[in-house]
Length: 244
View (cartoon, rainbow, N blue to C red):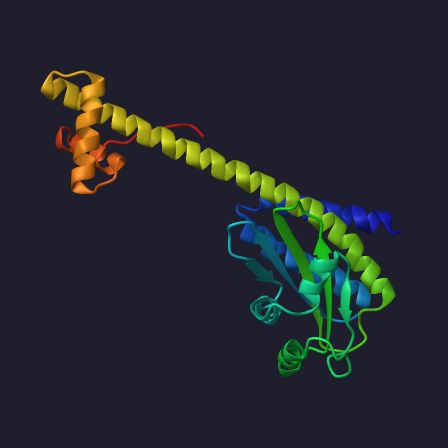
């Protein structure tokens, strides 16, 4: 095992996780590193697409090139091909030559029309609610030897770990943003209730009931109506500030 090289890949992927601001950006950078890694191993130019599927979300597709991204996307549209087969078996799936392999005829025609002669699909290990795979494309047949496939599997192991971390960070960031938004909305509503209490000499419960009734009657979100109430008694829009 080429340990120094593996360590270098780990550092690159770690830096991608730390430097990415969202999952889509991470996948785009990941596809570039994957393509470079396998190109070095194969001694031939290899492009890479990557697809991430998450429950209740549309698939996210990225690629090291426009061609790789489009070929990956079209495979998802067709619902058939080596990358999807690798997700089903959780093992690498090779299409050694689009001219001689009889599998996936519709997708093979698309590959041939785009100058692609060989494909390698490699799954990434995630949890049950998520699935992802690397889709490697070569312009020459027979590029994906056993040695290249082993290199792809080793890279996929590191990539899967990095992607799991990137997804956890993204989920935590989204949760923090949702909580911050909820706190801001709650404060706006509470302030509006205070205004109504002062104007109507009523309790907080009664003020909230008045605000809720008006929101329903006007078919307006409670938070937006509360903001309108505050705007009418202030010189400008009222803002709330929270540290995430």
